[in-house]
Length: 528
Image: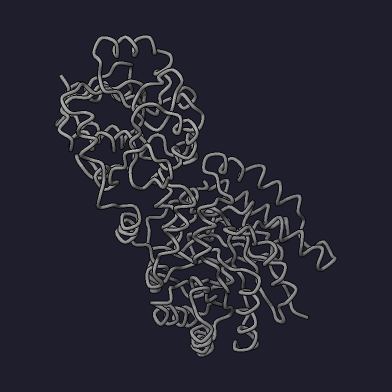
């Protein structure tokens, strides 16, 4: 009868969440809980050419990892992973029985180097897993060719790795069938799944039922791993207990490890299903394409879907930021825009920009007095407010525009939008997003985009209200719609980036603050 073993990869794959900095004592505690749970294999971390830190699960050799292994590990065995281009094989000792296996990963474009690396580790006496990246990137014929090469190297195991989380049931059945048919019968088959489509448990259960030889299923505590995460080990352990009907895995100790250590990490850096990773999986793309567009902060999932659908096959496996931006501007850039009309609105006038900070409302009397005294051309950026009904509206963020569509349709003053916003509303001036994104500074923040346009229109002086900054999330915005996930996770970086770009702008335009701003102090020397 074939055996099904569980491999916990929390300390290795989960390390992408916390930079492998679990802490020595926490690492030992996690290992002890997994051993007590009867998990078959525990991956201790990565072999890397690195500076060793006992609090991290990155190691230069087996000796450094050995300290984590408990004296009494029962039937649990231990593995490490190596990326062939990030760890020098000569650094590795000959096998002394401490580590059960080393898992080696490589891309399709460096397959031969990866297989040669496996051969060298075998020569040192180790059991070796062959874990090729992105199985879904191989056609059936390419996959058969790969397996032919694998048979000649003859590793201990070969893993079906769904790197981009795009695998569905029909794909799993196809690749598993080819493996069963083409791989030498004594080679163990592994399975490594991600949660992009929320399919990992159902796929793992199908794998376990269909497999006709010894196999290993990867999972991690609470699915810990780069967003959206991995197959949760507590779920597959429970499923295998039911399948085997002998309660082999003790779930309570897995839950204890999650309670004691993993939830604290997840509170700081969450993982789990997220639509952008569904979209990257939908097109079997490197996850960084979705992240790149999400981090722009101004694009809807609908538009992201259109963009990702255009990524050409040769660009899918490795992320190319320049290529991703080119797609963006090809999709949203326009030749004919309303920049001339925009120039007529602002020509020779004082300018007041209303940002959506909470001080815009708490100090609205001061703002209204400024408007009364100076008669500026006033722009509300990415919001519509009953407190300021007669201002011009500027939207550079597609999400915000969609959220305020009904109010925008009823608005009496000018509505200026950038060309990355798709709308049927007719009473708008549409300016080329390229003009807004690139000017004094490269920008996807809508306030900075507006400043770029104002500068191109010849404006030399701008006043702000409501540009509070990102220092206190609980009071920063006039509308909870602005508390999106990206901002919540990256407030320090966003604030710093905004500040550095305002410093550049302040050398070319005079900036004034009608309401208090967290940026005033940094800009004081430039503005005085």
